[in-house]
Length: 306
Image 1 (cartoon, rainbow, N blue to C red):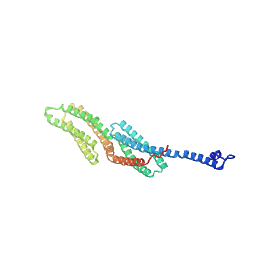
Image 2 (image 1 turned 60 degrees about the vertical axis):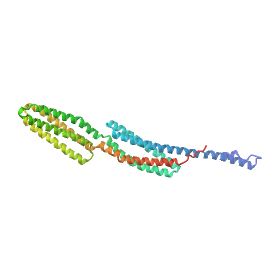
Image 3 (image 1 turned 30 degrees about the horizontal axis):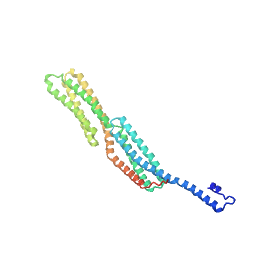
Image 4 (image 1 turned 120 degrees about the vertical axis):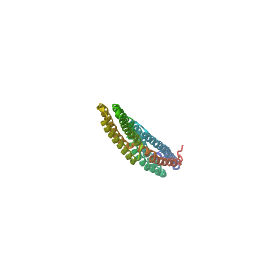
């Protein structure tokens, strides 16, 4: 403004009216140039606000999908990788929220700010719930219990049966029927535990699991009792096979105890239940709020000028 005044300082012989008119023209020109930046800034903010709102929905979807993949993964490595991806998406959400909040405040968009505040509250609940889900998912206790059941436990049960049947072949003709019946009874008791293992791993009710564990303990006790009876019926030549059978039964019992501990943790069952239940509801609530935010932003016309 000082420059304009200096530029149009009245010259000798020049009328005051002409000098004043020149000054006013330059002042208006400068004012218009400065003022046109404001609509352009508003336009930039509006575009960025819409981009951030859309990106929030994308990141929310990515976070939810990665979390679901972590729950469904069958290895610790895969679960951990998907959990890390979900966490990265949630961090991106937090950054977008901060950036969008600054823009909405600059634009003085009150309704949109309320939508964003509502999303922030909803997202706090989502993140807390997802943290529980991911912590459970990476444990994979049900999958590990299943691997024990169909790996070491099955191998120990097979070794027990084979050793017991080998011991039974050393019997005399007089005790054949009795010994064969006892061998069959003992192997059936161990098989009953194996059947209950699969049910226990899939079960989510603690009362039902306790009932299964009591049945397992009863079957294991019956197997040991029958083994003691066989020792009195079989000749000394069967001693090595009986010892091998007893060792295999000990391994099976120890593995079963480990399996029960893992199955009791129920991390895969619990994380899946949370993902299919509460998480779906909370995710939908967050997405609905973001949709409302996008709709509110879309009502504003772009105000830039050429």
